[in-house]
Length: 388
Image (cartoon, rainbow, N blue to C red; front, side, top):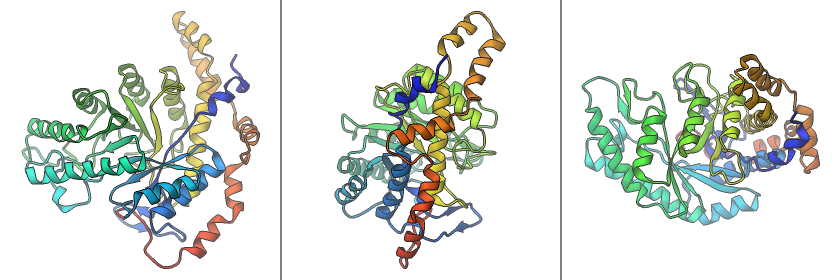
């Protein structure tokens, strides 16, 4: 039987990247709710992200979104992050907030618009050269609302060409991470709607093109852990965007809607080698906290991932394989449920204390006074938010 002491060292290598945009104001298409103390620029976003890492030890890097996080001097931003004990991570493109992209970006019928979108992605790679980032993440809003609006096959051809032009700019140590999404903002046909489409384009591009799996980007009832398994099996799972959903792309705290699903995903990650020391999979949060306080929302999320990982590591692999090979249906399920039902909270508190971290990160943060400090310090200026 696997015990917590058996897995404690495995937890040491967990790293969960935070999204800079999680610290800004966000909302729905109905309203954006402003909160006091919200960052006004990328430097303050990174300062808030560093608080999450300070209290959890789980979040050593911060993803940027361009142009939301554009600064005059990325060397300075990199030094700022490193001075706070974190580093700059994935660079995310944005081709969904410009009027030119109303009918698409990489897939647009107009060559001028496609050139503009590609140039933006290439600029992001230029930024990666300065920040030391490995991954360029591309999520596209491209798609159609109506049959007859565009030619589905032609759009795939244009997408392939645009991606190839960006891929050619990557350095030897850099990757293109292609995200997919079932729907939204296009409702009839999205140009990269599923893992298979993303996978097909990545294979055509080359070994340094990999798939990003956002846990909120699937049709209801989709077996996400099956997709995790398949992409691991094919060697093309490059990154996760962790969040939770009840209906669609809800961007809620990961583990909030279905913690058992998060456990099942992490079980497949571990079983498929995605958590091994030499794994190159990037584990990232992609959440927009509409009504939750920003920093506590991120603390809760990374702790939820850690708890699911710990439970998945507790699965008795030998017993599971034996049950599977014996055709013991209930026995195999019991092995998984025994691990999932294990209460690891006290063990994780001890694990943190033994590594110089607060046993209860949330309480430690709330008692630190940082939240009150930033409310008092961040007066004037314009708060960062969705689109800024």
